[in-house]
Length: 323
Image (cartoon, rainbow, N blue to C red; front, side, top):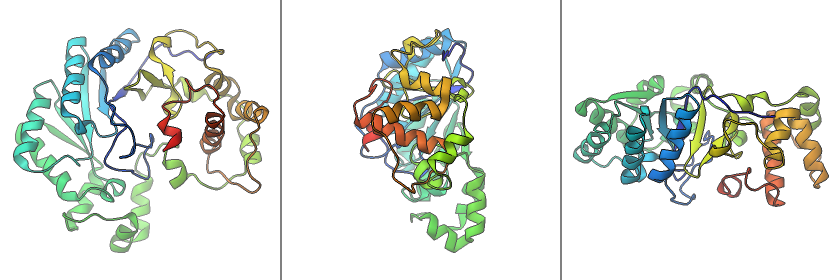
C-alpha cells in the first residue's frame, strides 16, 4: 500500500490562478483557473501536517502567489504561528508596476520572516512577462534586503541584452541567440514530466505498447517526498504527479485502495495496471498515437477516467483536466 509517512522537503501551492500559461508548467496554471486562494485555516492545516510528518520548512509557490497579497500575507502569518520556516516565495514578477509599490509589498513579506524571493527568469515566462518587471522585482529585493534567488541566473544574464519592455517567444530567442544555445540552456532547466510540459516536451517517441512493455513495475516515485507539494484545496500531490490528489488528513497511514484506487494501482502495478483498469472502462488509444514518456500515457488514461466520472476525489483539482 502507498504510505506517505515522512516529508523531506517541499512547498505550498497557494493558488493555481496565474497571469501566464507557461509551456512547461507542471500544474497547468493559467489566467483561466478560478481565482481561489489558500485560506489561513487551510494553510495552518498544511503546516501542521508538515510538522506532524517531520518537515519544518517549505517554499511558497503557485500559480502566482502575489496576485492576492492579503492572501499571501495570511499564509505567511499561518507559517509563522505554526513554527514553519519559509525558504523562499516564488514569483514571475507579473505584479510589478513601479519600484515604490514593489518595495512596499516586499517589506510586508519580509516582515513575516521571508528572506528570499525566487524570481523566475526563463524563456517560458518571457513569452508573457517583459523582462523589465523581473529587473524591477530584483532591484526591489535588494533595496529591502531580501535575497533574489534567480531561476535561472544563466537566463537572467542572457536576457540583459534584450529590450526589457518587450516579450519574446522561444522562437524569437532562438533567432537572436541561436537554436542550439537556447535548447541547450532549456535542457538544464528543471522540467518535470507533467502538466503542460507533457505536450511541449513529451508528445512523441513511443507507442503505448512500447511503454507498457518498458515499464512493468509500480510507480514507486509516488512515495517520493524529496520535493512534495500541498495545495490550497487540502490536497497532497503524490510524487509531483499533477492531477492526482491525496487528502492531507490521510497522510501518515497506508492509503485505502477503496478510496484511492488509481493511486493504489499506479503504486502497485504502474501504468500496466492503470491501462488494464482504464481499458475495462472503455479506454483505448487511437491507432498510431505516440507518447514521449510513461507519464504522458498515464495522463491520457487519467483524463479519460475523469471524463467518465471515475474517482473524482483523487483526480483533482478538476480544472487540471478541464483547462
